[in-house]
Image (tube, rainbow, N blue to C red; front, side, top):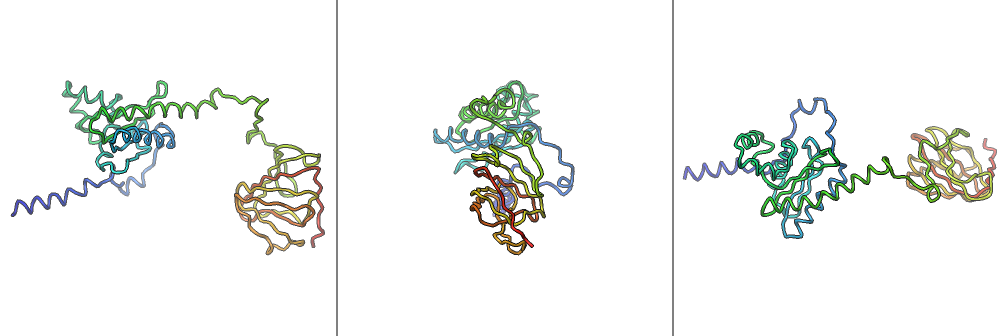
Length: 311
């Protein structure tokens, strides 16, 4: 009876440990300590895609696994567990990933070496983040740089885990290369696509607002596009235009009124993402109150603006 009671208590005390997260919550001292920058790694979106690809590869074989992608310091970037994957696979995957990063080899290579090198095995076992070496994690290399590792756990054997991890490596290489290519070598043919970067926009100040032409010329026949930036507290006076104009609010809150007087109580907030049409020859006025409003205006020239005598 005493043995049974002791066993029950031991199980009850041990159960929470099985449900713990990979790392315990930080102490107050850790929270207050300086937070150094993360180590180099692949983008989180790419890490998520890679983890999902590895899970799908194992899932096609009927195995429910966890896939973990870490950065060059073994810090997790993305962890995804398939529906029904055992919770412990998360911890096993973390051990595999840590082994790959710290030992600078795949976890399978580390497992093979540990079989013939007692000192190497002892060094693994002495580090709680690694423990017993298991196959299933591979380094993520871009050129000669190691940017992290991907680990899979949950298949019947580490060799199967590894084959699922292998599936993700070409995806990572392709996505990272695509992100780096435009800055390195890719160019657009100006005969096919004309590009204007933010630094090349020509901003001028007019009547309290800043404007930058995108295409066309409002003073000439044809379509035109212009960016308008209203700083907080600035607005136009009641006016009308000879042609319809279409506006899209890019950011901030644009405030607009159809009153013929400068009555601030008549202003209506136009949130970002809204489209507005200024009907030709109809009175309106607009601006910004608490934050900067950025608007794109499109219309047909030549444009004339008639001011209302607002008192």
